[in-house]
Image 1 (tube, one colour):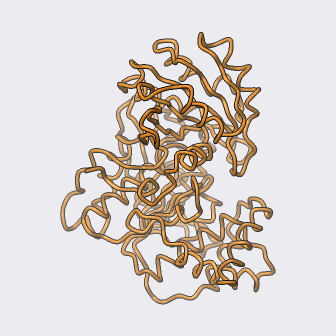
Image 2 (image 1 turned 45 degrees about the vertical axis):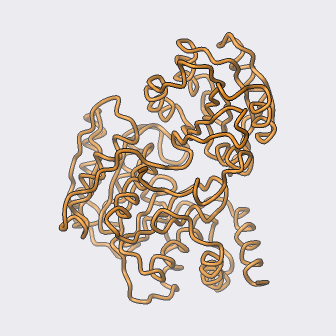
Length: 427
């Protein structure tokens, strides 16, 4: 027990090591890992938006056909176990503890150089081998070419929709970002890519895929097998995920046994997740983790068609720093112009990698844009409590913005359980 408590404390301290893009450290750590000879079929997913939803959709589809999978994703909403879902369910704390002890021993031999993200990725690889899963589903953390997940010997790569994001790291043009994402292509292996609208972006992806392979990982340059997938405009993330999942399904071992099962609706925490209030006299909730402009734009059409906006509703909003605060919320402002909320409550996400934008700042941004009160409550738990007290069961609260904030809301609503944090197809 003492060792397990210590390994959690160790993991927490590694957050202070910051972020490190590059593969050398992760590659060395993987060479030190115990290899039990089990190698799951590995799907590696990159993209600016929708990659998590694709991973979740694939996980749900695999569970539906009885295939054991492990889905590695980030960030987590409430607890780190969410980053490792076996058959859609976060692993048990004791399972994670044992894996952490294994990776901690490797980190000690490397003089403590592994970052938090590198450690969690290595834990995912270790668990996939130990639990003998059939399919390992890996979501990239940032970019693709230099992301720790690139060290995995993937069988299939997928790139979802692209947008300008993390320009300080990935490049300040869509073409540069496309190159970083498409570099997850493995030589001679299939890569499925959502066809971009811009011809220059398409050409950059084709050029990158034509010379797939990273020498540092022992890969010899060779073209990957590029497959474009057309997704209609104004498609939601959920719909895009299904289209891409159908395209990749035939490449899986499970694909030889039949077509992909139908996933009509997905339970994916903090992605249009509906929750009742613990108090039947208080509002119900919708949680959505759209946390950048492109994400807001994509989800706006879905929100406009949702029944709740035609009834009394409240906006709960908080975010991490953005290039342009006003630009980020434009899609929300359009919704509020057509369907004004009763109140806007602004708060500050807690527990994430980045400090939340001060609620007073967001209050100043929203005030001239809406005709309703804008209430500033810095602590998310107090913001949730305010919504529960100030509004009744006829009201729906839309909590949107930072994924970290959605985790804060789940905790405040007493919904941080495996039931609410699992990934599965809805019945």
